[in-house]
Amino acid sequence: MPVMLSDAVVDVVDAVGKLRADDRLVTSAEQQLNEVEALFDVLTVVQSQLVRRLGDARDVDAFAEVTGRAIRGWLREEIFLSGWETSRYLLCLRRLPSYPVVAEAFDAAAISLAHVHAIITALDKLPVELRATLESGLVEHARFCVPEDIAAFIDELLEALGIDKVSDIRRERRHAERNVSLHAGFEGQRVLHGTLTPEVGEAMARALARAAQPAGPEDHRTPGQRQHDALGVIADHYLGSDGAPSFAGAPRTAIITIDFETLENQLRDGWITLPDGAKISAATARRLACDAEMIPVVLGSNSEILDIGQANREFTAAQRRAAYLRDGGRCAFPDCRAPVVQLHHITFKRHGGQATIDNSAWLCAFHHWLVHQDGWTLQRDPSDKSYLWTGPHGQQLRRHLTTA
Image (cartoon, rainbow, N blue to C red; front, side, top):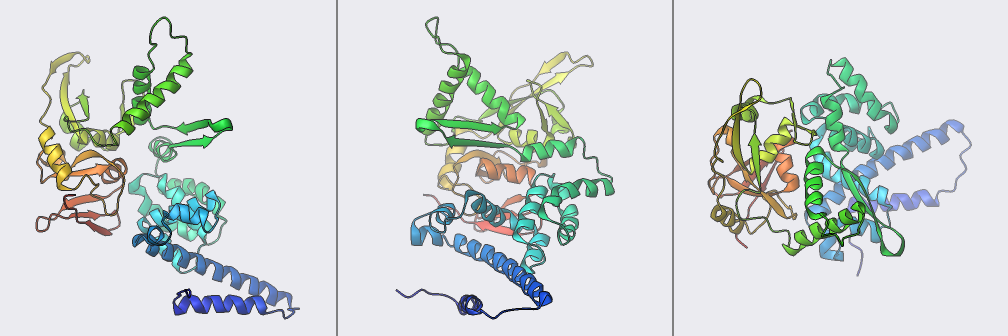
């Protein structure tokens, strides 16, 4: 079967063949440097087009249709890219649409793929409200510096803008550095390494503490061995449920020891202390409270408990099942295939949103974070019941879901 290529790509392939066949001797030092610079410019253009074409192929699921592989597997197993190169391309595919100034400079070959990766990595570690402000400055700086200088330049921009980079900015950066890796070791063992955010760390610590209790006096396992075995129990529990969300009511209970109005409307930039002393941002607290029962606790001037209220009305088990069936158990974000975990209030509770079927959308963990803490908004079109997402830069995506 002949290889199908567009005329533009055929022209590029022909030009490369012509370049390879050119064995003329260049004696002018100036011409040699000019040609090298020109080739670097062409390389940047090709890289920008490669990212765009990869995105086009991903959007129509071409990798799975033709090769039966996901895009990461195709890059690794067919093109034989290194893990680092693959991650760089996938990061650009995933995050470049959120940074239009970076994308425009990349398309114009004003910055390289390495610069794009460095800028995206740096901006993603900042609070969402600062990214648009700093994006143009970073792109302009990238035109005249190596990619390794991008991260350091952020501190200069923050100082020039008079923004305190010591407290909240550092916490946001630490949040962006969250990661867990599981590597193959000797004889089939795995090596676990990572850094957890405060809320995930507390949840994991509580789960391990509960699942790693000694079984009795005959249990001679070390604490580390018991925690290892507890991880297996936690994994088996998740896999045994096939990742299905709970329909037995709200997945957590939030005991609020501050005024509810303060939590929902006034608490914007503060940090909240969890029971174990770890701190989470106000946005994180609101995200965790989105699908939770609220129990208000009124404190006196000396922090004594004056009153404990009743849990507020949350989605019922019947509503949770109905919403799950309505959308076929899928996340409301376009093309998302991750398992759903949170039944989200489309109109936030602090804006008067009620616990109704029409005001609900099942979301995966990532897209629930996206709508609470990354500048995205979600609406449900009353005419066709589709989900309309609007990004922080005005980009819009729509998903139509029907019952499976």
